[in-house]
Length: 591
Image 1 (cartoon, one colour):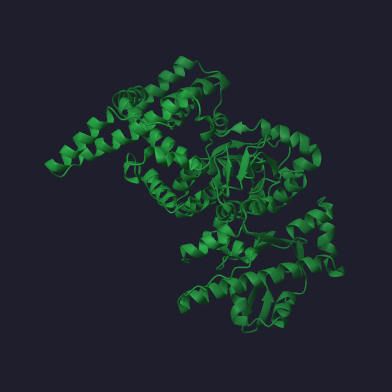
Image 2 (cartoon, one colour):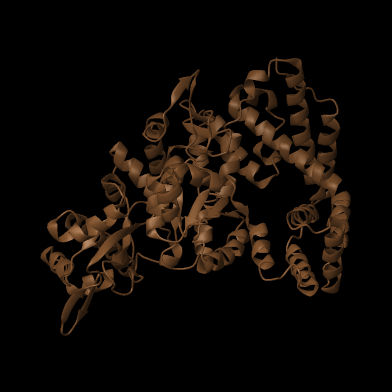
């Protein structure tokens, strides 16, 4: 929903950033700012800074930054509207109701009702687990060495042997059959209604915002199927959700452990590995990978050590790589899964296995290796050929060569022979590693100087903006020389226009300006970095005075060069030439 800028600003200004962030992060005051451990990446020394004067936060370690609204968005994984509503409620501000169509309102009402029913069902199952009829489920979980605290944390429950208990309970709460059909919790037929889950230990499935969106159930006894999940509903898509992610996303580790089942996740969390997740009865999907990428760029696959687990890992590796996630594979042998491993060897040994997890590419080569007999020359040759084809997946020459060296070392293949084989195979299929490298070097040599110049211009615009934001007194020094129009980098122009406008109005508020970039993550992060550099303290020395003067001249010169390339008439060109000539004698003083 669209909210007026004035209302957004009212919510932001009435949400003191130190108060908001203190609810999530332990902050300590140092000078004029507060510091703490960044909640968005793992660190031992505090690099997370909160500025009361700017009403902004910034991490000098990972680059996360923003205002109170964006902190809640990033930490809670909320949309802008959800974060704004949370802060508005906190500040006692009533937001206008969204004016939506009848159909859209019906969809929203249905989603809200389904979430409400799922929450009731989760509480009901939890209640049953701790009653005499739930003893069989409780005893099963205790035998799996789960503590009461862990059961409570994950909301574990029990579905009774009576096949319509939950249905009767939900009906008693006033819910009609037409709505209960949509939950996936009950089946309603002409001959009657019965529960989806009965005689099962229940695992509530939560989204990243801790809302119950579905359930999994493990049968007690020999019934089939052994594990059963909720069908997909308006609020549950098993291909887009991961079990345990609601907790794992707040872990301080730099990686996420991906395993196969509920019990693996729960066992790992109980052992202190709170960064573990699992897919919900499906193989890892591209949607799962995209979801994981929001929280990490490193994954350790902890799938079962049997053949099915190996196949699952081999399927997952390219999916993760496609979205830019680096994967490793954990060796669980001689045990089948993390739950079994933890019970026998414990958390310390599991941690060592994580530290020694296998590089995913070398794991793939390990699997290929097992298909061939090293004592048979023909099979050994085919192993080398398949390995060489696999190495051609790396398009960047340096990375490819690093892996050729690693494979040669690990599998006792002469490096030069393997490299030659990779190149020869590449030539046969039209992929030439040497030529690709030469083409890349040629591109760099031709475009290098141009790129360096462009980077220098961008850096000058960025630097000048940061100085102006940090020290508004510098506006006097550039009056009549620099305007917002002189910032030709699109993002910097947007920021400059708002900064100059704010300064002219006598109200330069970085946290408010940042709201304008909320819908573009890349622009938002870059803009946040502009507002969180500390440069003004060093402007007193002669070197910095000279740097400021040179930066202003570079920005202005680039602006005039740009104007000359886009000139429309001779009069404009003459004016530009006069301004360019005036730059030669321009003196900018900080005194």
